[in-house]
Image 1 (cartoon, rainbow, N blue to C red):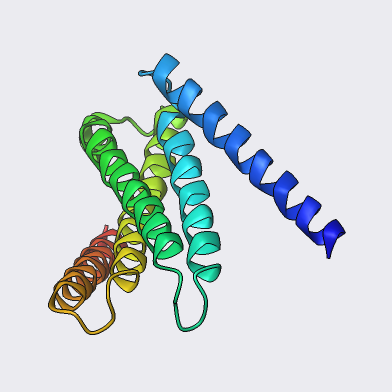
Image 2: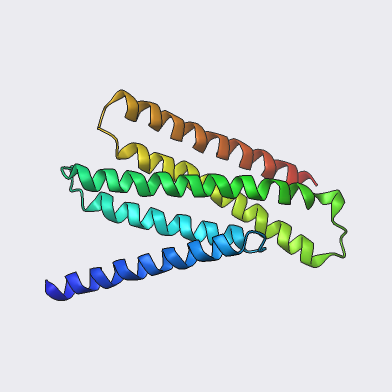
Length: 171
């Protein structure tokens, strides 16, 4: 058991070090082309920390402090994913079809990467919101409201993705 505990402590330390490195990069590189990728990495790391805290709350959850800790991680990750969408929106608009010539392979590649990250951020924001809602008191009005909000985010993602796939299939 002590080997497992040491391994878990080391993993927690590595997560903390990674989180710090991501935050330092983001604060020092406001215009870096891979900024959205770093935000996605940090958001995923926070989801992992939230999952870890939620799991240690028990099944069914009895440790409310761990559940609140998990909710905090999920909320922070959702905020990161939503801010990624805000940052990528104008960049994608700048790189729209007619504004990028066929011979500008680097811009086309960047646009495709940003599109993928945008879709991923939308989906992960919805997932993070759902995980946040699952940390609220089971069956409470607040939990029901937040689960409905998560469902709405998933539906919007699906409808936007389906519409975009249909349009790109016709182009």
